[in-house]
Amino acid sequence: MRESHRSLPRVALLHYTCPPVVGGVEGVLARHARLLAERGADVNVITGRGGPLGGRVRLCRIPLLDSRHRRVLAVSHELESGRVTPAFASLTARIRASLERGLAGIDVCVVHNALTLHKNLALTAALHELAARSHATRFIAWCHDLAWSNPQYRPHLHPGVPWSMLRTPIGGVTYVTVSKERQQQFSALFELPPSQIEVIPNGVEPLKFLRLTRTGRWLVTTLRLWEPQIVLLLPARITRRKHIEYALEVVSEMVRRELTVRLLVTGPPGAHDPRNHAYLDELRDLRRRLRLDAQVVFCTELSGPGGRGLTLSDRVMTDLYLLADALFLPSRQEGFGLPLLEAGLTRLPVFVSDIAPLREIGGDAIYTFGLDEPPAACARRVIHAIMGDHSYRLRRRVLASYTWEVIMRERIVPLLHQFAPAPS
Image (cartoon, rainbow, N blue to C red; front, side):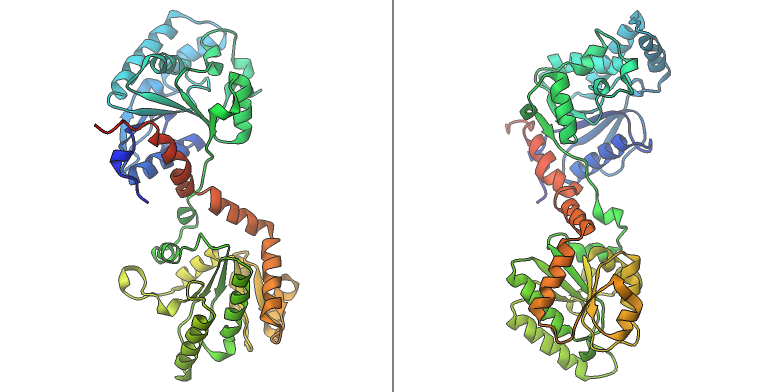
């Protein structure tokens, strides 16, 4: 569901730098900004150095926020030796004044790292002053790193202000860490109970990471391929020797065991035998009788993006190998078995009928089943092998909990709703 811009606060995301400056925090900030803007939020990025992020994200550059600005470096050099000079107070005042202008009209400012890291302590001091007295703008401290908890940074820190601000809670500020370990470190450092510290992890965008084609993205969305527990790929034209009815019966057994499954049969009816269209009709009838309309997809039935017909090019087939959890090929006959090679390159577990050409290719690196093996027995074997595979389990864990879409919908948007102004 897309949230209305009226249901989200006006947001500023603040960090020393933003893309194209390369860094982990910079990448997270950019994804937060873009995903919030896509949901209709009014998003501003306040940064010392970086470029426009595109879309509806506005950029406010305040050069003195940059940890590498010459004035910041000069003050940092003094602080490194434990000296707090008038230059620090002057820089803090300049930054505070610039931030007051940049935050005008902002409901909530999400500060990435600057309240817990020592890279620009004048910025930290300015934020402390603003957060302690501001009523118009609320603050969220998004804590990726904690200077006082990192042995690498401890030699650069000294007793007293301003270094103590990196471990001093500010009333009214919401604190977020990116992992439970950071939450425990933060709790000990700031002497706050863990229940007062949100944990919101970083994420990944599978569609971008996998570099799927437009058609591949359409298939993910249309068939909801992230949702089933198991996605089986059967890359074959629809001919009787492919023994596709067996795959439907195996899927039926998996569903009977309360698994959510999607079987993708990629090919159209074979072009050289008109009886193959009758075979497709038989498979459709079997799908109906087994009540697998939602589980079994004959790609030849799909309309494709824009309703112009679905074309499964070689590149789109690569997408399907990347999207599937296993290759399932129950053929009665094969001259060779090219899908096994493609599955091998994409590290896909392979379940195939026990026939000589497929054994020759796969050796002991594939799972085989007899052509007369009961579908229930085959289903048990497939489930046991897939569920026992650590790579599969990690993939499903990522898709369930660590995609940016899930994190944004279930964690970040609900948090920001708390800061939305009351309707007038």
